Length: 288
Ligand SMILES: [Zn+2]
Image (cartoon, rainbow, N blue to C red; front, top):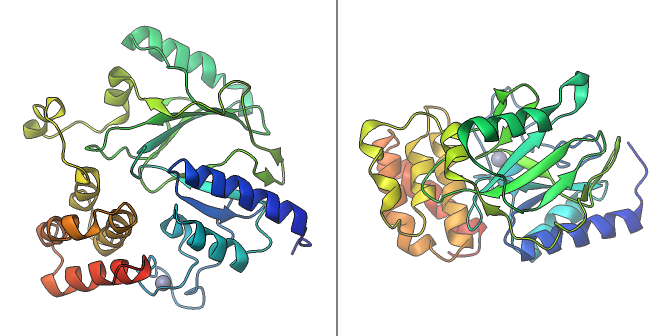
């Protein structure tokens, strides 16, 4: 294991806390860009269904938080962390990361420009993070009512998309390949809204009844409810727990609990399972 550099650790914690102040939920990362905390279930047979319900840290992006106290606890448990990950898809920004790769001769920036020309959108002024390998992460804000899936080279070769359940390496992070830093003049910008034409490319084909929705005002937290409704078997409890944690952290846990529970029942959890998962989310976020 790498030696622990206390100064570097303090620095990355400061970066992570400042991201959290902007409403971005973070987790500590190791030099390999992977979550720094090992799963508390690593000795049990895979796959383990727990994504934080046990109350211990070590569940990857499911640990992500904007609560400074929780973030300090996570980093204290991972003093070898040299970076931090920013969870995508969470309120208030519903962050979407457009990851432009430069590896293996692909020019992802040119591919994005071509997509923009063909689909008539422009990338707005927003946060851009330069990766040590010469790539770029473009940060965009998604709508609260859509779940943007992660994808690799689906839009075009070399363009990866980080959405719900994914994370971006935050600026100020140090990895074995170098440091991630914001491109000059973009650090102070809020993540700009994803252009609708690009959003259509990022979203899976909507079900027929959803086509009329985007014009309507969406009550707070609907993205979280959608996130649960989109759960496949095997992710239902995980997604419910995650959504409930984010709801409590954003002060809408109490008001959203019933809707989250209904969504969980719709995707096949029992009422007992759903209520117990929501209760653990409330406990973990200090609301019970
Ligand atoms: Zn667990």
